[in-house]
Length: 231
Image (cartoon, rainbow, N blue to C red; front, side, top):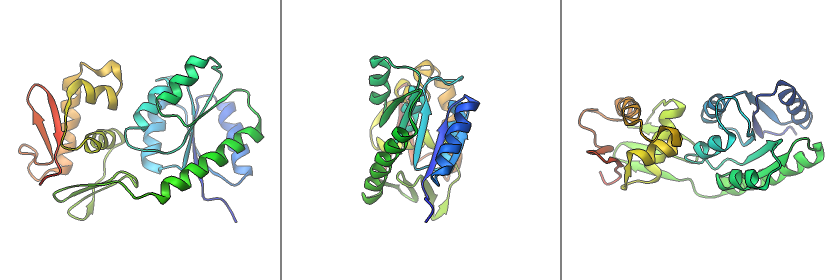
């Protein structure tokens, strides 16, 4: 019986991508690959893999930032593969939400063993109750990454989903502009309030009956936003 476990590999080295595809497919895993952090985040949102294998040295962002962004909306097991053998790097990656850490070069047997551990975590997570947040006619299933409005699916971009998931996971709390920007985009975006407003406007157009008079995501003038469930 073939494995239905889907692995997303985020690594910019073509040789490493080929090696991992060969190893994993030989053991009947399904494999997708991404070469940048942004591409990996988009694929994670679109394809909902069961396990993510992540390199820290990506061309557009550090792998720890990818971990941070993923952990805003998913608990998918993340295994770091990196040439960095420094304890500080390992601790930082694990603190940002990685589940495991392997140093390159690594043995095939060791990688497969770590994947088996990740699959056990996956099975445990799937046995737990889904986290479903309801706001009026809007339902957000964080475990399954499904958004519905009035019973119909809502299609969001990866960034829109991360923004909504972060707000909804802190429902009824005021979240400041810098807090949202740091946790959804990264610390370098803390002061880009206009950037956040653009995405919030796009999100409201998809979620609200009257985007200029929102009921799901309220503005706290000069402070931030609050996602409301008491509707």
